[in-house]
Image 1: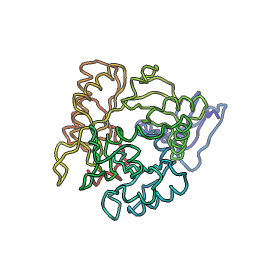
Image 2 (image 1 turned 90 degrees about the vertical axis):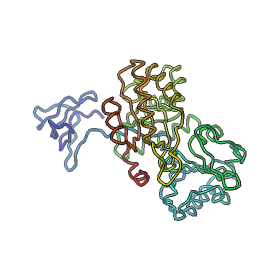
Image 3 (image 1 turned 30 degrees about the vertical axis):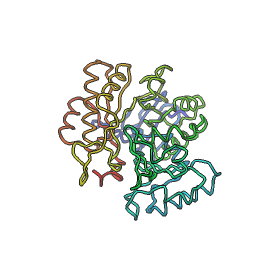
Image 4 (image 1 turned 45 degrees about the vertical axis):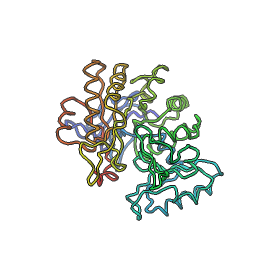
Amino acid sequence: MQVSKITGNIITLDPNNPRAHFLRIEHEKILSLRENNGKEENGVHIIIRDGHAYPAFVDSHLHIASLGKFLDSIDLRGVSSIKELALAVKEKVEQISPGEWVYGRGWDQERFTEKRYPTRYDIDSVSPNNPVILYRACHHIYLLNSKALEICGITKDTPDPPGGIIDCDHEGNPTGILREKAYNVLVHPKLPLPSLEDKKRWISLGLSHAVSKGLCYVHTNDADAIEAYESLKQENKLPVRVLLTLPSEERHDAQNKGYITGKGDDFFRIGRVKFFADGSLGGETAALRDPYQGKQHSGILIQSEEILEREVKNAIHDGWEVEIHAIGDRAADVALEAILKAKRENHGPSFRYLITHCQITPPDLIEKMAKSGVVANIQPIFINTDMKWA
């Protein structure tokens, strides 16, 4: 349907013209905003009687495919005990075949009455024949049952991979808790590869959920998803506009296929490439300038300063807009310096460079970011989960 006119209480968000009563559209472009209709034009006319019209809502940090997969897996966000978590796994196992992987997302040990991390021993009895992986709310800590550990080849003799940690008990046996890169290195390569149809199904579920919340445009970071989005676009099944940000490890392959920042059209476009400097506050893997309260450590940098600086510089040189995940102030220091060095050396395109999350940002960091024009890409939803950690 081609909308030509909207009449009603229109909120413009323009401080010089905050409200209007009449809006005219032609070929998906707003041509005019004014207080009255004036001359009658042909076309579809929508009259808003009791509500308001707003500019489209855009979410600048989503993982649409992961959201769709979440909607397809166990929702653990409201679980208040380890016993309840195990019951949710049991119910899922009873619905599927032996050997199928079980996925669950959203648990938080701070909400558990037991006030501890769950272990594989808590869920082994309800999932003896199914590998299970349960993602913590932050997606930086993971719980695997014994079957999953066995498939992934993780034993007491498995060393911590670079940038990751395998939690072990007092006898040196894995508890089932993995942190950061331990998942990427040891688990992810062992998971069943999703088909193109799996990805399209998850993306469609995620986008439908976005539409239900009033979103008209999403910035999403999804791994290995370009083909799925292109296919949905060709099938006219993208209900919202999409800017796809790529994980840093995919940029070379994408570039070889002709994809780069800005490629695409108004409905599907390639956006930034995303790097990670640290982890999360809840998992105590966010890199801080000072130690965590009552602890002898200050988190971890996922990769060295030198590697991050080199990779960011190369990405900007190749024509990519860059986004860096940094939650702790130490990580934000490193991320900002990597961007500034790359900009000085490359004199690359005039993109906006983003530091994502920025949860621990002392005044000196905020001032430095403001002066350098680096965008703080924050997520208000983390107030619910991370304020107590901050």
